[in-house]
Length: 343
Ligand SMILES: NC(=O)C1=CN([C@@H]2O[C@H](COP(=O)(O)OP(=O)(O)OC[C@H]3O[C@@H](n4cnc5c(N)ncnc54)[C@H](O)[C@@H]3O)[C@@H](O)[C@H]2O)C=CC1
Ligand SMILES: O=C(CO)COP(=O)(O)O
Image (cartoon, rainbow, N blue to C red; front, side, top):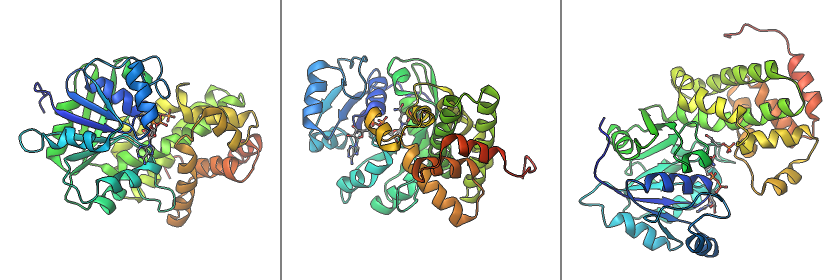
């Protein structure tokens, strides 16, 4: 696979922390437009040349275009449809994916790449399944995932990601466009594995944050990460993923980052739960819902339906939604019957 020399037209739809960081990173080599749905916020971002609300402290490069005009954002890539290979990057949370895709429905659009991590609430679908439901199978799609805190990518610190798509041409295209300048992009065809890894690691980060907040120690943290990986793998393989994917960047890589890195919003939810705070208060304090919260509910429902044993997810969901005390839940996890490690 070749690193691309020629700049591409790229539109990033969604101007939160991650969309802004990805746009900043790609703007050093491409013609990038960052679109956000809130006109006042985008005007503020343009005025300050910084996303003060979602990614403060990271100036936008001069070449990065900013807009709240959806037609202009699509026009940016549509103009390049015939002679270049533009990219449309969807950078909203999972909850926003279907509504955002709805705005693209029935339109001629280029290849889409999504960045969200989770299962859709209610349907229990993975992002690629939501994309297929709304856009059909004619538009090639890819999931870009892996261990990547927005704040570090915006600073151009080294980072490795995985792009997953069933289209080999799109995989090559995303690698060619994004690989470079301290960003290493690996490719694989296991969309289910990459998306399950990215989704469920957020639940494990809540668990690890809770254990750390309760002062249960580094041994407990390592145990949770390792048994969390076993749990993620069991669910993923049941859903058709390749087991090896969970040893990669979108599996173990992102799990380690999010469970141990204090930049993680999901880990911070766990730390707050350990202080006995209720979910409503935590959401108000953090200013948003970390993806692991709705994901814990979706994964618990899915695991029960499929008969997959996911005790850590059950524990996180019980603390989040059933009012169970975090200390009591940790004791219940430890009191489980012994089992074979690889079962
Ligand atoms: N922040 C990070 O370091 C990383 C985040 N991610 C994932 O990327 C996704 C987005 O995360 P963040 O940008 O951090 O979230 P954020 O909370 O910082 O921003 C979310 C943005 O999406 C927009 N949005 C929501 N619904 C929308 C809709 N229907 N149409 C258009 N825009 C919509 C919001 O207005 C907001 O600008 C999540 O799934 C997250 O797990 C992945 C890797 C790193
Ligand atoms: O997905 C992420 C890093 O890869 C970001 O994690 P948080 O949403 O927990 O901050």
